[in-house]
Length: 65
Image 1 (cartoon, rainbow, N blue to C red):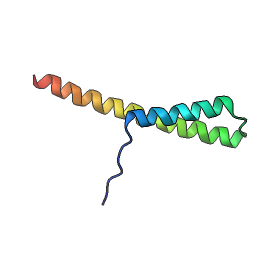
Image 2: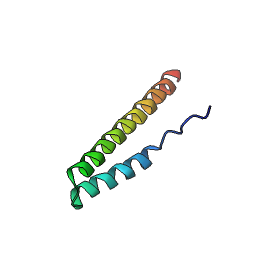
Image 3: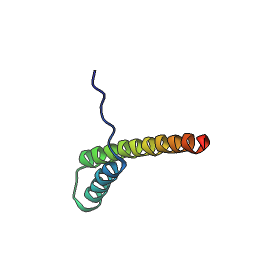
Image 4: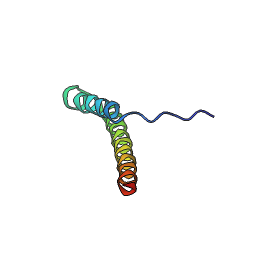
């Protein structure tokens, strides 16, 4: 079974920025706005998970020294 590759933090940030720009600048329906917002919140969760994982890895590395 293949594992899904976690997107890199910079990719997450680019996608999130694109969603914010679209929400701020395009006339969207309520449904479209909600979809963009929901997807953006999922990207925030992914970004936070990535940052948490890296912080834990760094802590382990620093504790080994």
